[in-house]
Length: 494
Ligand code: MN
Image (cartoon, rainbow, N blue to C red; front, side, top):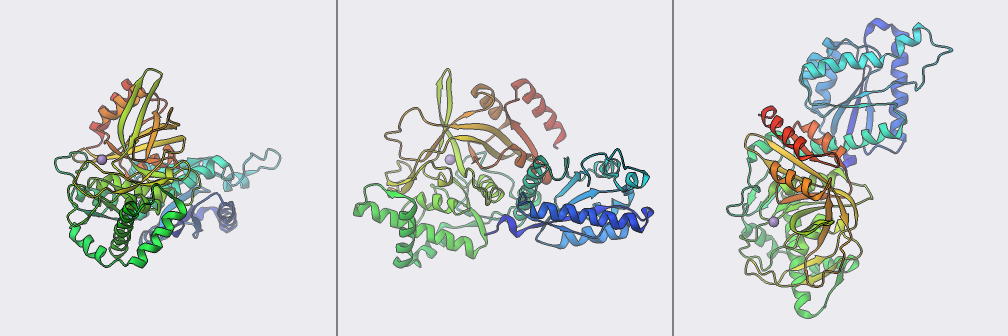
């Protein structure tokens, strides 16, 4: 599976010959200082690679074409230390097919009142060099993000780190396979969508496989492999009522997990979907199996919802290595509608990822009551409290739309005595009424990818990089304003 630090970024410094050799030497040295400083700061998830200062149209085009060919180059970061006439960039920008960030910073933090002369002014021109460059990227409408500020500041490095994660994830997405076992659930609207459009726009490939193909792999799984995985389960989870019946059912989930993982590895898959209507040859709906695979970093969604499965994988890779929070497939299930206690309870039939668990999950075996199969083993837990968001990706026919909502995950008031699934209770922002009204108006799905590791900045960058619509419901949202943006976007995003 891919990791965030498999990727690196090219740092391109723009200038021109007019300045003469001395100034250009200083430009290259200053850039090196910044790149080395950022690389050794420990603040960035991926390495920056400094390239030769770009001073001609030919060199710009050649460099950007090379970046476009490098599969592990996840983007180019451009900075105009001096003035670089932007017509020189047209051919290069036309060749660009990588995520693109413009930074507007300068080598020195302060204006040196006592010492500055015209040589200093000629060397430190990013205030207008970056504006000239920004004109051309705006004119050519290149999908772009801009980060402004002093390069050593935490704010600057944090933003760059978030952008890098969004960019590397976007590039990784261009070769992502989402393996579908069965199709999406019959007659469900939002889990459907244009797979060709998703491939063109995001690179997501969603091949279908018959469940029988998975059952073949299951038949090749040995008892020793299952023993080994059972040991792993017992390291991280407690088994409730470890009688023979339950152990056998947990072993069956281990067999399913081992088979799905082998299938994913053999088919280069990073996410998968199941469908409880299509389990021919499977004794149980994958519950614990899907949960433990999500904990390992795979994307997942139920009922054949390949868009949400891909988004769960996307958010897992975006947060790769971050220690705070987790990410899960989630579904708005039911509400608490008491005034002053307006909450969403999220869960699914079985498949919530233990990366969001508070404390040690238990493995439990219960009947499912749907699908007419054996009682599936599943992990049961409450989610950790804290800030997070839910994110849905939907197909509006002609375009993909991201619907985002900030949430606060909270501690349940009381114990769930009989609920046999993992769950999260949250307060949506800005408040329950506004959030829910806006979400439903936007068409946001009943499934979502939930994260407590990331925040809105990452998703904003992701939408900028991939040039897809983002409708965000945040602490500042009002229904009136949201309706207006929705209406404008329907005209803008054709
Ligand atoms: Mn569902």
